[in-house]
Length: 267
Image (cartoon, rainbow, N blue to C red):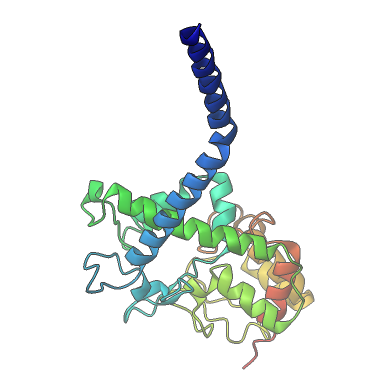
């Protein structure tokens, strides 16, 4: 009888603890996920910064992108590394969930098609210095920044010069046109865009006369058409060096503020 009672007790206790385990499994897994993710982001932040006595092997992305990833000069090239706290990155991730990982692994050629891009390939699979795990850590960091920027961008953008300048920086315009709109390399100088259109472009535009006429008629409408899709609107569908900016990447209120900022540029 005692053995039978003990058996019943043990079976009941086992059933109780099994039920308790499954009831707490989801919160436990969520807690473990959050812990692992926090460790991954912390490692990504270490890799992003310069080498330290405690961590001699880093990518030192901060050298170009700034200590907090908000953008900076690329050495003495005159190029501007993009701000990684950008909703446009989040928008690209919606189209291709591997976008950030691919750029880190294979370099800036993924974005621009330029094999001479100053953004190198970092993955060891193509001769770079970083392991798969290190690339994953940097990917997680940049994706977290992009997600936070996208969340903040959902707030309405005021139609002011100051807000437009913020859009100019966060949308990646600064990478080609420079922090002072002076133009980087062959990319256009926009410092007088408020007075006249830029016609000295890296690629000859088939509808240059239309471009000039549209600017003269309504500079704001012209800039909207050019920024949204310069290829379709002014070059008969042939690509220009100006990428398209659909509303999914650049909302209407952000574009409006950006144009306000650009039209304020007068020499």
